[in-house]
Amino acid sequence: MTSRRTTTTRKGQGVAFKVAIAGGILAGLAALSMAGAGPAYRLELLSLGDAFGLLRYGALVALGAAGLGAVGLLIAAITRRGLSALLAALVILASLALVAVPWQQLQEARAVPPIHDITTDLEAPPAFEALAEAREAAPNAVAYPGEATAKQQREGYPELGPLVLQAPLPAVRDAVEAVAREAGWTIAAVGDRRLEATDTTFWFGFKDDVVIRLRETDRGVRVDMRSASRLGTSDVGTNAARIRATLEALEARVGE
Image 1: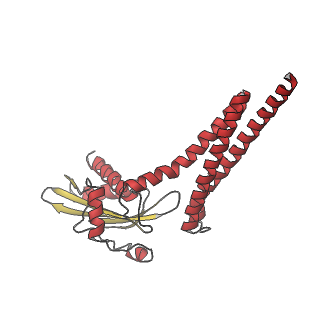
Image 2: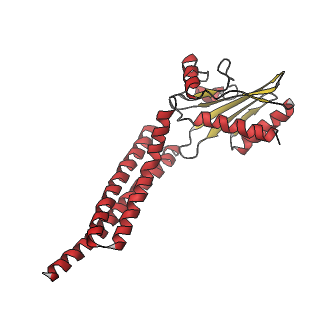
Image 3: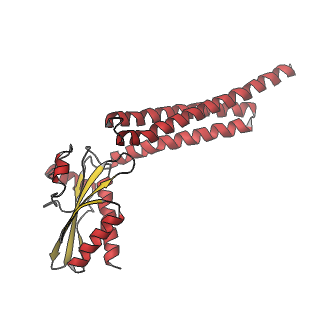
């Protein structure tokens, strides 16, 4: 009887280890799938729809890996196999971490308005001039979309507005260019009162265009900014975040 129990326990220990290893392999495949989606799109190996499909596939595989990890952990707990339990736990944690990335992006997308063109001046948004041709070749329009988008921005980003700086116009212009270069943007045009540039996202290589306009007022130099994606209906809050970060960096630089 004791011999049979020992044999059963050893078999259980072996099964726990194999299940955990299988979960680890699935987690690795999920990671490769999700990490490769962006580069494959940038290299034009996949369409955008197929790249997003690869992300979804990776997330599903990661959930499957987490399930195998849970099974392996249960078997390891019953058979009192510490190494297998540790391996299974690591598989679960790694798989959930992979799933957390697209889940977080989904939550962010639901929390912001489904728009892709953001500006600090909703009445007279800065216009793209140097980048007009590039935007004409892209799916999204060159001109500001209009009141429907403005209404959604007011509701979703009520805090966004122009920045007024107490500094000479040349100093503000130089600060704008410095902030743009520090951000790694590709500058298309720089003038006395405006700058146009393109910011390319790291993973998928999405291109978002930026125009910054300067106007002298009685209170100082008014800085207005517009950031618009070339592709997609929703920017998941990227353009609004870019405007906030840019204006904060500009205010800090001018105040030095």
